[in-house]
Image 1 (cartoon, rainbow over the protein chains, first blue to last red):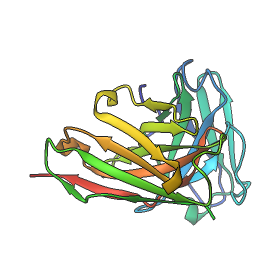
Image 2: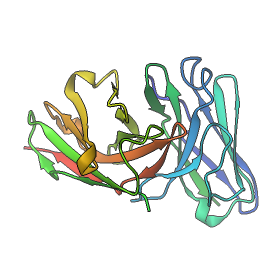
Image 3: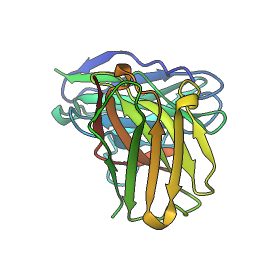
Length: 110
Length: 118
């Protein structure tokens, strides 16, 4: 159960698009379509943003989208807004009824 | 309305056992589509999945912490309990409980900060 690999930081200007990658192995990201993404603002609990790789829960902006290729999943945020500045975490179901998180990515909106 | 709320001690001494309770509302712990996990986050660091309990009472644990963790539930009280033995200062973290639905953690508690210090 090694942590998934995310870039430590990404940045973009308002209105731009950014993509955060999440790399695992064939035992987690590559083996299941059960990747989810979370947004966390300072001092707050994580918020559910994407599930099963591409699906958005009710109430989440369609500016957020997910995808996967092989062992790497990605979160894309289009039309960046100041309120998108936060930490983002990916998670994947892994073998033997376990889950694993990524190391987190700090998004800065310039 | 789905809510989860963690409760437990804010300070634990090294070598002691931590017991945390997650009280849920708005759903049943016997719902076959759902389960509850415990997840922690040391200050300034990443999230770490710890343990999960399914509606069937099947349990799963982080490989690295398995020997120290026990998860259980009381469906009648709508509570999920996590115990962690032999606490160490490196276990200082905010501990969250979260509901699983569609293989993702859709609802989270507010978290409870546990400090391990003598």
